[in-house]
Image (tube, rainbow, N blue to C red; front, top):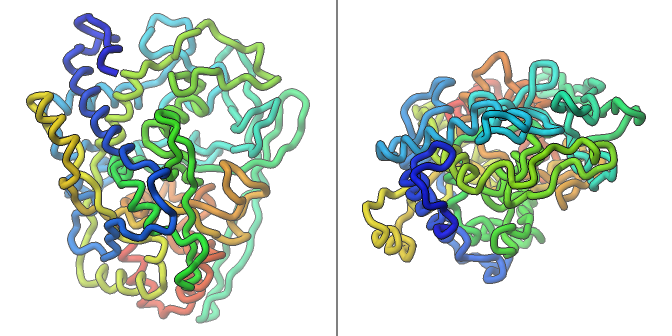
Length: 481
């Protein structure tokens, strides 16, 4: 990777010394994360360092934690970056937040958009690094189409550059249902049956909706070992607690090793780097070394090609965006007596069986003055800290209510990855865009709980039977994360 750097003072206007430092650091952490491949690990292994204890301080993100809990806190860098690393972080931020444009353009470092796409920047979908929006409010919800279609591929692109036509328009039918609580109070739930209307000749087609998640903490999740994720799995429910937890093993594009997926609603991507490369490819139509082919190989868009033959985002800039997202800060959790009471109820309901509080992770982003120091660090496995994502990153049966119409991403239709809960309260405090679960159907934390089924059915039933003060304490705890 280092030999591939061009011998010049700048690359796309970025000082070479900055890119060199960034490349060394990320290459070392990538190496560290891939040293343990799933080929070396048994799914029945239970020797990894599991940390299931609850949050004992407000340091949700370990050394990445910041005190601020406002909406702007989702856009802050983690506090331990050196001044030089902050400059590198700012470079990555510019390529994640500023709009990409259609080629050819005078902005050579930022052209390549489309011809088909869903958004023209990362933060177009991840609004202010938070979650996406429903179609009537903006971008941030995409439709997965299951098995690769010769006409549309795996994902619908509902936008196009001026010379092309979008594949279709997202439409939906609203469906209401009611759940009765123990105190005779009824909860009204709403969901949407998403379809898309093709502008060419096909009127309706079933689809799986996916809302863009918040970006905080992804760098920390990337630094959790494969062994620790696998150690929490129990696909045959051998302990008989009704919770299975299944690893979605996927092939790493970099070293071709099978590894646990950990990113995406279906845990379909094994690393943050691959998740970002896929988003550039599917969501923005921008090719890279990991996705060199155009997304529009399907019948309807094969003729809508552009003039770019090289990857439209270089490895260096893809790593810069990776660096930006990986180093976003995690807002501190609020802790007081009520949140502690809520945490106890959370555990009593069995929620922590899937939303396990903690993982240990290696200390990321150390500052090195010399390459030899970095190499010494790469040989050390002792630098660890505890983080609190409140997720096991595994797939679970979530019941028929949340199931798609067909399997996608090599997973059954009813299985979804446990969503991390850190920052939940901040996201739920945005009254203009409270949308939870994989398709944004839940308008509140309460609704998100009530949609849980399958392995979580018993926990949901217990939640409904709680007294009002107990429900209030539980929700207080979740909003404090």
